[in-house]
Length: 375
Ligand SMILES: *Cc1c(COP(=O)(O)O)cnc(C)c1O
Image 1 (spheres, rainbow, N blue to C red):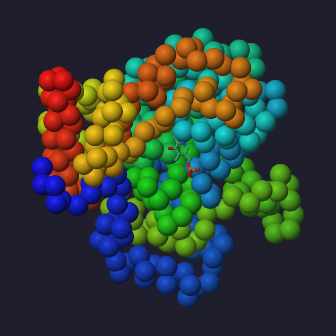
Image 2: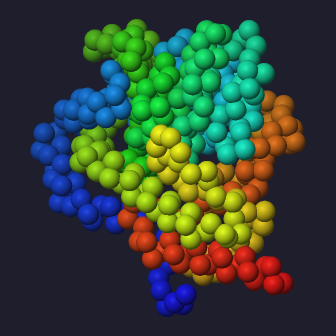
């Protein structure tokens, strides 16, 4: 390794911004010129484009992925006294949405790869269960057929947390197509990211779309007449304008992520870390490239010392989060989620990541493994 080489960043948003100028600045200037900052032309246009991209009937722009999840639950009339099942290894937002509507989050273990475990969901169902929120974690869709079958039999809503899975494919259909509704986030570092917060609710159900359009805008369909809980969760026009410039590039960026993932796999095939299962059927969009190492913290420190940034998604499973202690879970109950929290390491991954950086990361990991074996 060249000790003079620069740092290997985990994500570099500037690289993408540079590649899309001046289109990004022009799009933002256009919003300034029009002055339609709230629910303006670019919001309507981007909603139509995102719905078409996902292959769904409706897309409703909101201010975050969390809001998309929350408004989907509200549209389903889910609240006090209801239970909603999700996996213990997701980001806090999934559970935050359930808490926001006053329902009880019911956590279940994930499978060994971090995807939804349908049998665990089935065991957690009670007569109070109203919905299941499977999470397409890291950019991969798990056994959504199994979830849909179970939910169909039990009359439960399925709301996809697709906040890491823009463009992911399962059985020929894109994320967002499977549930009663689905939520996307346009947080800047997501596969499709805004210049701030943003999100989208997608659905094929006319009533859900209508309800969320009302809910995001002070519960009003007609100005100053409020028929639902008055909340403000609108997508900013300027964010929609930015996202419209980026959307045509999403498939290319996802293809580049797959290419980089393949490169990691090739260079690390005999290495000291566990690799994510290869894509197989469908399309994994690698929001994150997550490897497993028993000595994860030592490996991470070794990489940091060589100027390589990494991430941990997520260091605490949800049942160990202080804010969720009231749910009464104890460590030991979700072994897969706990093992993933202890052993997962997310390697640098973004479309503009140079291939040389993948090679440098792989060399550093392999070198660390050999030194450990020799020690
Ligand atoms: C990013 C993310 C969210 C929430 O998105 P925000 O836009 O930050 O509210 C929800 N769930 C998962 C799995 C995410 O990764």
